[in-house]
Length: 100
Image 1 (cartoon, rainbow, N blue to C red):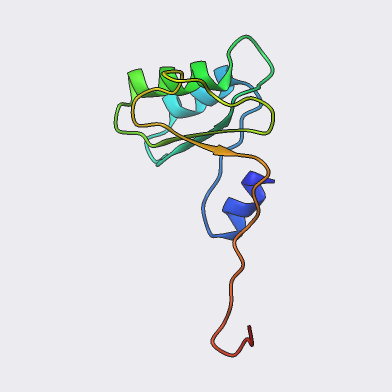
Image 2 (cartoon, rainbow, N blue to C red):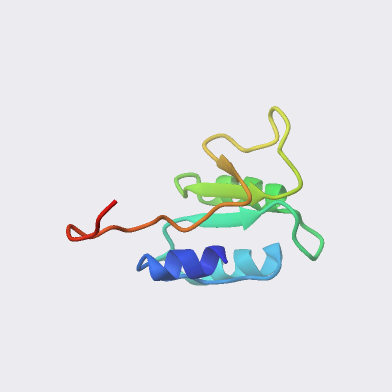
């Protein structure tokens, strides 16, 4: 759902099922502007561990962490990373001719 929302907003999205896949994508590209990850991911690395790895390797990369079941505790997010709880919704866009 998050990928669809971002693509609908005009962003180019690279999806990875596991943190290792995400790191491989980041290693192979220089045009990625942000990382958006769920805390609970399949494979051996959580989204929080992915966020920390991204922060270590690409310190200026914005990182947004999400979850519908797990809320990060104090100090669990790397410096500069942000958290957004699920559920979230796509923003509603109005045109000048819409009545509200």
